[in-house]
Image (cartoon, rainbow, N blue to C red; front, top):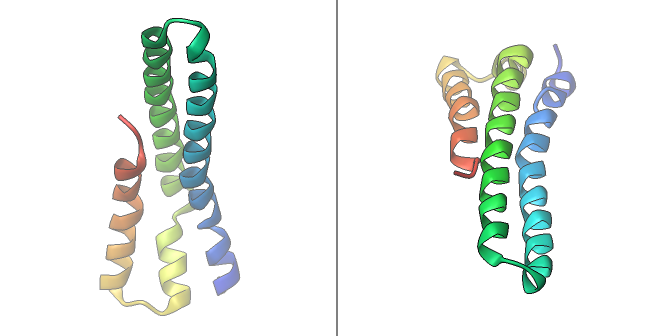
Length: 103
């Protein structure tokens, strides 16, 4: 496995990190625009509920990607990392999503 294919295995994780940010900004903008005509508390309750569903869905997507793509072994081998770097990258890929998901 060369560095290009190892790098391509990491791209879905960048997408899984970026999409929730854009969805959150879009939903928040729509909520603030619609809030002037209706009940604000109900809108924010729906926003919070949608954020929890989105966080759970993207977490399962992230976990499935880590299990199926196994990106840390190929990338660490292509970059010539020792077992310490490979283990650190594996832990980063597994724990990072917990810190990025809302709720």
